[in-house]
Every structure is written in structure tokens, then in C-alpha cells.
Image (cartoon, rainbow, N blue to C red; front, top):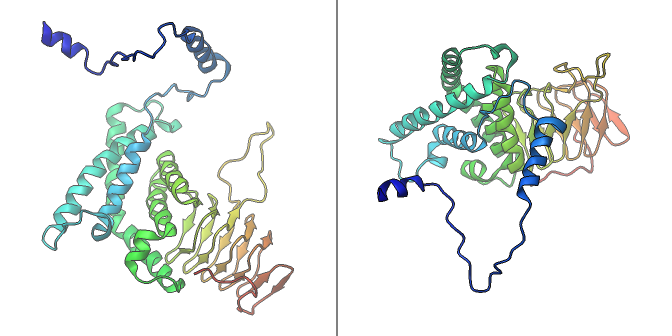
Length: 332
């Protein structure tokens, strides 16, 4: 009987131990009324629940763990356990992938339920599809790593303050944000937009860099400093592009339907071609094209396309010069 009583109390909140100075006549909180008012807010006045009433949500804590695990599998020397050897590293990578892809499968299953096409999908079919997506992401990891290595090399080449690759991997927020984005973009293309958005918003909160998982970004992309960078959902960025802090690649306008609802998914963000440099504070809006090899100066507000080789600074545009905009400075 004693064991049963102890078992029934597992997880129970222990009684509050009152000191001699604690008043015994503490007034009531009025919890019954507060709880009733919160229920009315949830159920009647200010509903936020999904229309399908879904209660099983993806877990932020689980997603953080998964991204950290996949990062460790991609770069085990830098993010894995410190005692790895040439003999043990492959075992570590395999074990880490096994654990985190299984965790990912469960989070994908939860996220898929939010898609209209899965409203009536059985749990067995949903789990099978989640496994297929998680497996495909695993297959893509070598390609994702290759892209990230190109981003790291671009940072080393583009920043005179960078001493070595390890410093970039461990310290640069742009590389941290791009690790999240490369994984999130793959999941976005695999049909799990909610989970992809989760991953990039975690990076946003950590780095101040806001990249929508739908944005298409080519290899050798370098975000220097990074704070305040915003890259919209339909932005397309070529290879060997460098941007500085507080750069915005945003939308100029938001078309709406006859009932006032915003149109979703239309191409509304810039196209940035190869070898472009965009300096700090520049804002580029709308479905415009920044031609190959152009330089966009600091604090420029740009809402129209510019041809390849342009040099855009405040108050002037020099087309085809390819020269760097004066007075914008390189961050170190």
C-alpha cells in the first residue's frame, strides 16, 4: 500500500513549505474566474486554434535538438564530441544520423497534419510519408554539406578578418544562419513548409538574420556581420553573392484578392545574379533583377532592375562600370 501511495504521487506538485514569516491568511487568487475567462477567450472570443483542432504540434525543443544533431553529422570535428578519431568518426556520424532522422520523422509527421491535403490521411500513411521525407533529406545531406562548405570558403575569402575555417564555423552568425537555411530549404522543397519555417525562425532568433525557407540561394553565399538581414520567400540569389548587415531583399507591394486577402506565393522578391555585392543597409524591393557583377552601395533604396556590372550608390547609378561604390566601407 505504501508503494502504491508513493507511485500515485509521482509527478505531483510537492506541498509548499511555509516559513514562520509566511502569512497564513494569503488572499485567494480567484483562479476559478481567471480559468473561466481564459476558456472563453480560447473557445469563443479570440480563437487561435487550427481550424482542424490539431493539438499535437511540432516541438521547438525537438527541432533545436535535430538541427544541432544534423550539424554535428555534417561537421563532426567542429560540432561533434571532442574525443572523435579517424576510426570512430564514421560510427559517430551514423549513430547521430540514425537518432536525429528518427526524431525528424516524428516532427515531420506532426507538421504534415497541418497541410490541407493530409486532412483525411491515415496515421499509418502519414508516418510512412514522414519517413520517406526524412530519408530523402538524409540522402541530400552530402549535397547540403557541399553548399555549406562553399559558403564557408566564401566567408574566408571575403572577410580579411577571418583567420581560418574553424573560426568561421564556430563564430560566424552568417554560417550558422545558412546551416539552418540549407536544411530548411530542403524541407520546404520536400513539402514540409511549417517545419522549414520553424528551423529558420530558430536561426532568426539566434542571429538576427531572417531568411525565409522558400528563398533560393546559390553556392558561395556570404553574409558578413549579418544582423538585420532580411531575405524574402521568393528571392532568388545566384552564386558568389556577398551581403552585409541590415540588407533587405523584400517585397514592394502585396496584391490582394477581391475579398481583401493577400495573394500567397506569387514572385515578389528580388533576383540577385552572380557575383553581386550589396552593402550595409541597402533595401531592394519587388521582383527586380540585380545584374551580374553589380555593386549596390550602403543605404541605397532600389525598386527597379539594374543591368550587369552596375554600380549603384545614393543618388547615382553607373551602369556597367563594375567599380565599387565609394564611401560604403568593408566590414572586417
